[in-house]
Length: 281
Length: 271
Image (tube, rainbow over all chains, first blue to last red; front, side, top):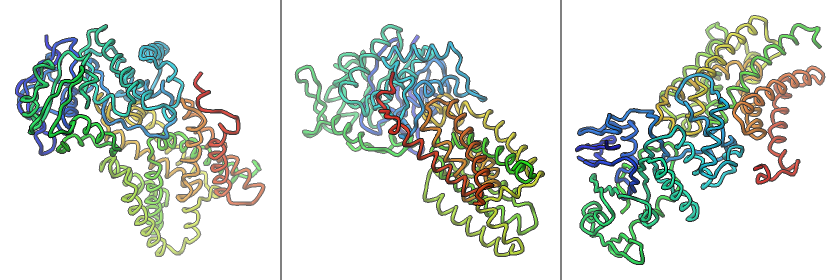
């Protein structure tokens, strides 16, 4: 059974059709790199799989059923991470807050839950973060904390929305390696969105490129080609292979690099919809 | 000093309000919504003077206006309640109306000072009963929404994905803040609500990083500051609210400076 099935699914956010008649299927245990310019619908796709956005037409199936909010089988690391910079809450309590955080009442932390959190933190090499306040963690440490949190509850599907943003190259590799290893060991399906294709080249099984409402899913050789990408970007794209790297260029500019720089700009908190605005490509 | 009824009343009223302020304030600081709390107290002032003008107990006017404003802010969404300028304009407007109502309520001009700066030494037994009832409602409400509140405060995007109704939680919390503000204003007045609702919680956030330890330290500090403030006022004849505000500031800045005083460097806390 496929983990994700979209059949001619169109997804609208406000008045804009972000994805138009997309048909894709992702099997169990696949590592899918999700790429495309800003505004191409990477976050929207993930929010649809989480049941936060309903398709306007077509069908969306996750584990063979319509997505529903709060599905425990999905681990999620959102792109817009509202972390109050001055917040001095220790890592353990931050992770614990998501444990049945949707239930009413007083939060409790049983011994077993506490052990599970500590074990998960240890698995991402972040055991020491349990007792450290969030305000004193680096971007990489926070990212590992959020990753640990997404892994709690043994998810079958991981949606990682730009988990490499604000990480230095060394930490980016640590995150990629860890996600790949974890996914292989447990047969977890992973959607990993990024701005840079090259870092994911060695780990992804297939790549999902989004652009101008459309999608192309396939191996690197099938999708990362001048004709396919030119169609998605709506521009004349060259794909250059050099020394094991792939450069996606438009009139001499490296598109992915430009995007990445743009994304380092600070964004307003709580803005879930910045991805619906036309990209700057 | 305990031979005087008014002192016992003051300790009881301040104790109740301080614990509520410490608990609710902890989450207010955690959510970075202290300015919204400030606005609610100012809007409450208009309600209090308005109620006084038409012959009602100012406490109910304060509570009613603050609650309405809190729920309104919650329904309009996070975008409004974190928008400083909009809140600033609304709270000035509320203070203006408070002044207008006061203008027609001249028979009780002394009441204005009490509303603005508190008058805990004049609290009556009936007020203590109301405060106790309100605090039970407030703390019960906090207990009811605490789990999703913490989740939504720390990680709103993830909480939304996990099925937490963000707007409902946020609205319920602002209603809770409105109740806490109303109680607190009875002790230190609408202008000094921060001394109990922000000072102690902010210090608690510096002193501890745990959730429950933070809530406990916050409530404990608020209680100690309120009672010590009354005691100092009793012996010094300074206004109670002044004493509490000084203690609140001292404890907060003390908590900020503590790591340096003890020679702690954040990195060494790791182990």
